[in-house]
Length: 115
Length: 255
Ligand code: SF4
Ligand code: SF4
Ligand code: FES
Image (cartoon, rainbow over all chains, first blue to last red; front, top):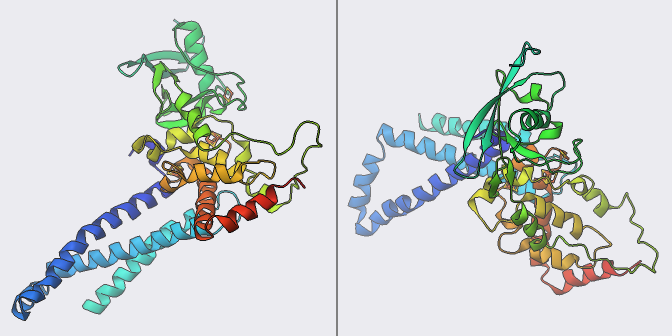
């Protein structure tokens, strides 16, 4: 990381970008598996058995966390851009760490629901 | 050898253009020494051909910016004590602009973008008329309190990754300038400035990375100014031309 980038707002940008790209990459796979139903329920069912494997559950957890990260960082951006700043430097940097916590909280709730 | 100083600084300075190299110079460490002092000392005592820029030496003119240990800074107001790492500093030209020689880079493209962003002021009155009175407490004036203090140093432009990624991007300083003008009651072409600031390469390209506000030496937040432009551009899009243009035109009439 070059020195001029080592600050929170830049990390928030990286987090938002990486989660966004990962989610975008996931979507076609998601549709692909859903489309299995077109080949009949057997095809989908055989996939759903696969989806019960622990590895899949971990991946699902990752997906939930990514979604939550993207959601909360996105909220910060929307707020920054649509709501006039109250004072100079009101860049909601202090939202960044709580956003991450919130995302992992959502992940924890997911884990609690699955286990 | 310099026998006077018990302590010395090891200064790596970029020499040449793109295919240059770092040269290391030993300079005595002094109290209250700025990075610009160090560069000047190197030029006076070691390397008369060293190219760099400065003028005011007190943080007003914006000509002395360089990359110091990887971070863009105004060198005349940067104390060595604050940035030296184990008695070493590395000084390079700013990023995102073509290098000319040593520490000087070509800022023409940077300033061209100020024009592209609609940054030229066009008055509503002639010299026979009394000057327009701007209420310092008015909403529009308060919105640019910080932004008008820009010293055109290009530190933000050098810090912004979107500028490195997208040649067309106007960059934080030019857009910050546009923001001051769209809020300036005396500026006749506010709508034009907004249109130019919204065009390809304009405010919509900013990814809110915040490196500009992080490094601006005078504490301006171009991120905030650009957010303001984004809001205005959204409004002007939703309200679609007539109403918005008229509303603007109305406030443009001399009071
Ligand atoms: S906030 Fe926008 S203009 Fe400023 S450094 Fe980030 S991307 Fe560049
Ligand atoms: S906004 Fe700040 S960093 Fe950018 S040119 Fe102006 S004074 Fe320099
Ligand atoms: S020399 Fe003028 S701002 Fe540094």
